[in-house]
Image 1 (tube, protein in one colour):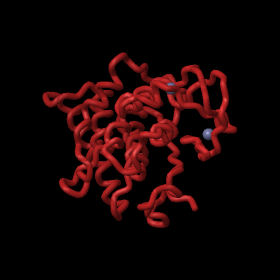
Image 2: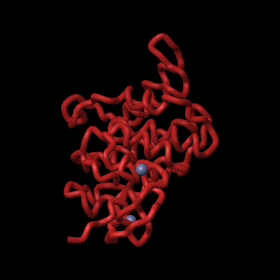
Image 3: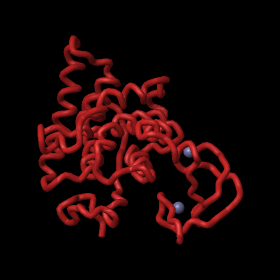
Length: 226
Ligand SMILES: [Zn+2]
Ligand SMILES: [Zn+2]
């Protein structure tokens, strides 16, 4: 039976070497590699979901948050549509900002960002009009401005960031697609950061999941590439 690479779909070949883990960036023993050299270390393979997000964000040198999100969503434990997507938006933006030399990633920041939107249940979009990917944009803005419930403009900005993202997701229409929601959240975050906080963080979502996503909205989704 052939094993396929989680990152590129290429065939994995049995090897006995060391390689840099595609997910966390650390070098470790590798027993399988694809032709492109993708490798997942044992720690990344066994990591629980929130740690997967942290490991990829900490190891990435990418400056486009969508590229970091795509890598997280290619982890073997990633579920196509799931609350896993509710916790990744703020962390990938914080990591991309760090990588582009804009805002240093303080210790504990990723964990804190994840904590803020953990626990939003599956299907909250349909049951209560909330999407964790949108709330994660609010969390991101709150973290960057130091907002809390007693603050003035900072509090408004956090609320507005979530609201604008929810609107973008609502206007996209159709049944849920967690990939689409993450990309819409990242694009909204990028526009919002520029407009309100004068932070430049270009994002170019490139959906690599259509072929394996049974519920892909295809032509109804602006990220769909045939
Ligand atoms: Zn590969
Ligand atoms: Zn790893």
